[in-house]
Length: 359
Ligand code: HEM
Ligand SMILES: *[C@@H]1O[C@H](CO)[C@@H](O)[C@H](O)[C@H]1NC(C)=O
Ligand SMILES: *[C@@H]1O[C@H](CO)[C@@H](O)[C@H](O)[C@H]1NC(C)=O
Ligand SMILES: *[C@@H]1O[C@H](CO)[C@@H](O)[C@H](O)[C@H]1NC(C)=O
Ligand SMILES: *[C@@H]1O[C@H](CO)[C@@H](O)[C@H](O)[C@H]1NC(C)=O
Ligand SMILES: *[C@@H]1O[C@H](CO)[C@@H](O)[C@H](O)[C@H]1NC(C)=O
Ligand SMILES: *[C@@H]1O[C@H](CO)[C@@H](O)[C@H](O)[C@H]1NC(C)=O
Ligand SMILES: *[C@@H]1O[C@H](CO)[C@@H](O)[C@H](O)[C@H]1NC(C)=O
Figure 1 (tube, rainbow, N blue to C red):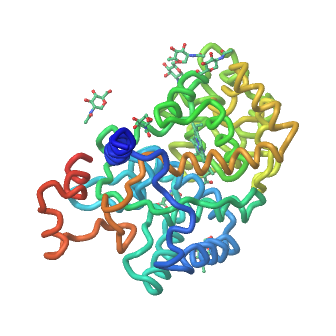
Figure 2: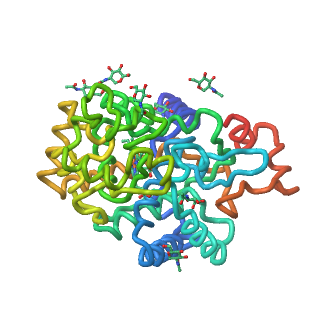
Figure 3: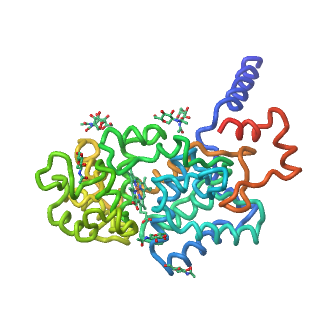
């Protein structure tokens, strides 16, 4: 009897001390804002109907949110006079796009249930909806993320985003730092079945590491030998030498076979030296990664199922829950500390206060 009580006491203590494996819940807004997920879905679907680039944009934005300070909506915050935000750091500007779609969803949600749905959750829902809209599997999104109050484009936090010239080891390390496996990394790289890239990411000017077309180190013609010659020829026509300097906004499709479909052609491309980035081509240089690429070439269904699972896992990185952080009223602006909330923030030992101070 007393043994059992002691065990229960210990279990309670452990529960209080250790962060739970997953502190998010499917259907989190069922009672507080029943139409939350429908509102996001309709907003994303309408924007996607107008411009199909919305889907890759939302999927990448969620990834870039999660890899920097966790999935806390920090990527959505605007730069102010006193703070250069995450979205204006090199890996995000000018490549992240369609922030206005998140704004539309947030405006609709604030009209329906003010102060309830976090910007971080909106992004997680929007990414899921984007996968479904382009032909991927839909999946349930555990929710209850809270929004962070910090976004910095000048500290080192955006260095957690993997640049496109990483090799296999570096890619695995970058994902491992977020507790994601090699398989998660290969599976999630399949998001490059959608969307576009600026020339600078593969024909980089001022970044020789990213230059696969004109000045590849050790290659007589300057072209990365891991890139198909025919594809390199095509890419050179889209991105002339110095294009980064003179045509900074030019982009190329990332999946040259089916650029707007959420299918396994990304892996077919990678296996045939049509991967756009060094990081895409790198998946062939490691036996474990190559075996996964080959498996996804064989079975689109297996990849789609795994993609949904890895997205959920990515969406759980370092989330704020409970009373941590806040529910931002405008996704671009940290909530002002009103008199009421300031009082709460000043409470010694308030988890919200320590959360803010620590990040
Ligand atoms: C494995 C490491 C990864 C690297 C090195 C990488 C790098 C990049 C780069 C450089 C771009 C193009 C940016 C530009 O110049 O316009 C891009 C685009 C994109 N990435 Fe990744 N990425 C990685 C993983 C991921 C993951 C995990 C996801 C999502 C699950 C993702 C989704 C996307 C999408 C959808 C686009 C197209 C965005 C658009 O069209 O707006 N990427 N990625
Ligand atoms: C449709 O997309 C274009 C850009 O492609 C944008 O300028 C316009 O505002 C969008 N319209 C709506 C209704 O979203
Ligand atoms: C950022 O990283 C660089 C190189 O790793 C280091 O020298 C610098 O001190 C870091 N800055 C901050 C604010 O952590
Ligand atoms: C990847 O790059 C790192 C750093 O340059 C290097 O130490 C490592 O050997 C490389 N790994 C592979 C598999 O090329
Ligand atoms: C593939 O990469 C992973 C992660 O870096 C590493 O543990 C593994 O040894 C590599 N496999 C081979 C065959 O190089
Ligand atoms: C990874 O998992 C470890 C052990 O559970 C945890 O301490 C760490 O905070 C996690 N890292 C991230 C980025 O989630
Ligand atoms: C080509 O790359 C080398 C280093 O590998 C660099 O020194 C040189 O400036 C680059 N040339 C151009 C035109 O970018
Ligand atoms: C590239 O796009 C930015 C942002 O829309 C714009 O300000 C700039 O003028 C564009 N540059 C060129 C050369 O078209």
